[in-house]
Length: 164
Image 1 (cartoon, rainbow, N blue to C red):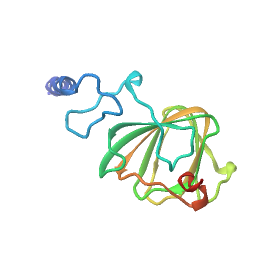
Image 2: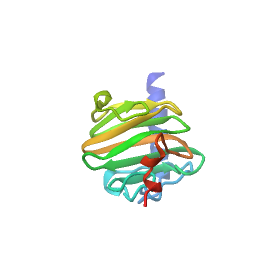
Image 3: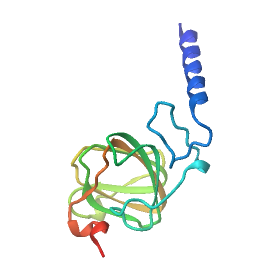
Image 4: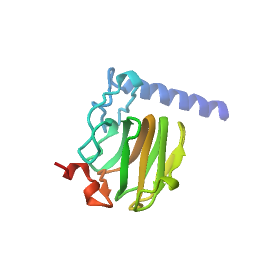
């Protein structure tokens, strides 16, 4: 029984691998059922939306963060990069890929509350839960959730898209 299950899973994996288009990259990721394979050398990094401070890079791995449905993005941040207190209307799931991502919950920035998340760490932040973060060293995180992705700053003055 166990051997049969293993064979079925192996065949399913081979079928999936054969249906993925060659050269699929993060920018060309599709929501079609053909699947997505994104190796680090094929990820296309670009500027994130203006709701993020300048200096970060973002890549869409799967789905469309601006549309309805599941999405996966990566955010690459320089040392000291801050994301001020904010919230999302849907749950946000964050996995640390590299560097150190320090996070805390709350409406106001407080360094003493920051908790260090190292590579492999995971955080699930419930919808409408206020939180903030800072990168220590060059840091890369993967964010997945249900779109459309929205970020609302607790203090509207912290929103980089409103600054001139």
